[in-house]
Length: 325
View 1 (cartoon, rainbow, N blue to C red):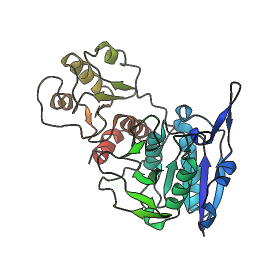
View 2: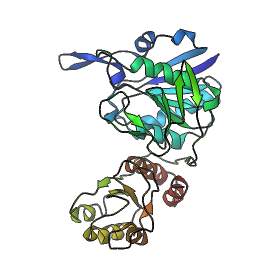
View 3: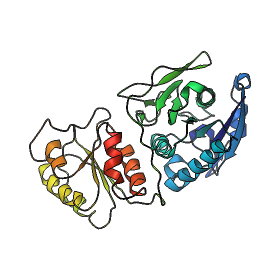
View 4: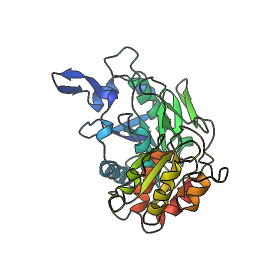
């Protein structure tokens, strides 16, 4: 019998409409009651319910506490695996943060839903069943945090939300899913090639790290305004890692004072490192001291920067050196 600690944080999966201006939310127990086939699994569920919140309002502090509580449960033997249920808006960021903090072999599986229980074709019950099935499968140990939706299993590092509303809204553009759930079985297809980064913050994750998404004719004054305010910066650059020439010098100046990470606003592919050499190119920016993110997308690069800043001097560059492969 596998004991699974399951944390319900809120989100679309439990949204049952509204009573006037007040949302009506189903409890974790109510959601589990509505999952067909759950009784056939050889599991015991330990339900932990927090005050439900939209995932857009989740905080680093809440998720850090969850990670600490879940690790303690696993360390003391009261849990063999962990499932986290939340809204999908920030699910890829939550998953990556938990992955960075998770230094245990037990799986941490995150899931949610794209259609609430009042809609035809609500996907919450199927996603809950799949997540619990994966959490109970021993072959998914030692893989850190996982995201399970639409019967696919994704590594926290690689998964991205790729659609605003369809049930099949999550994908791993570079390597595809690690596994699937088929006929009630969790099947591991392959193990991730990219190394995991685990960090041990020594303080709260409170660093101010804005995300600058670069657009056509971006105003350099935006970067200038961050000097003395931000603790770090992630640049979601154009294409393979490019910015307007006028912005490059400002970013170089910032990189002399705080970690500035070069990512791409494109949804897939690696940031280039040595293809172009014009002002504002990836070669120019890296030469100015920006930190290369590899294929880590900008929202996860921000999570990594904040976590690394809380883990000690020099950790940001070291963490990205591992995460970028």
